[in-house]
Image (cartoon, rainbow, N blue to C red; front, side):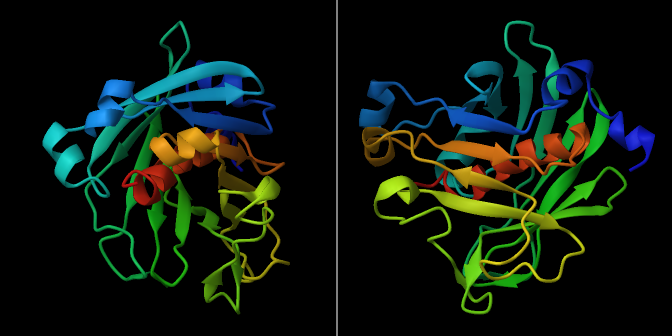
Length: 246
């Protein structure tokens, strides 16, 4: 990786992600009145390293798009350092076709910058049965491949990699695994994953009665700050694409 790639991003981004192995991203629940009446509110996330909140973000989107085009609504958001409002990451999601059983065009994507510097993007690829994304650097070079773990020769999502999906530690978890973009053997339980983004349950009441989501992001061990920022932003697209329409 060239030095200019490693140095991308604001000082706040570098300060928080340098040496960080994982991050938790928690969506803020709507107020009880909004929940009762099904009101749409701007999506807010809080970002934690360990038990310490380090940043927060609030998306900016047209109200009508949010209500009537929920799975595909375009938005922008800035991830800002807690208390100082220093920018860590800015993201932009254009309006694209919703994810489905298969996809061959009009791919979902998210474009990321930091302090005005292009960081890269994440974009859907052509797929059937199992959704797949590729993560690109600032020069549009392929860095990572992202998709759920698979079984049945890559034809189905493997729901048991985090444990039993119905009970125990695997309950309600939805993983997306991170692979090297050049790795062609990413299907099956023995695939060599580098990191992962996992939707995790917050509590039974939260899962059943709200649309508040939470994600644990485990970064590849050799990822630099830019690559970690791209995976952090990728979690926001995964949420918007698959879980915002709950």
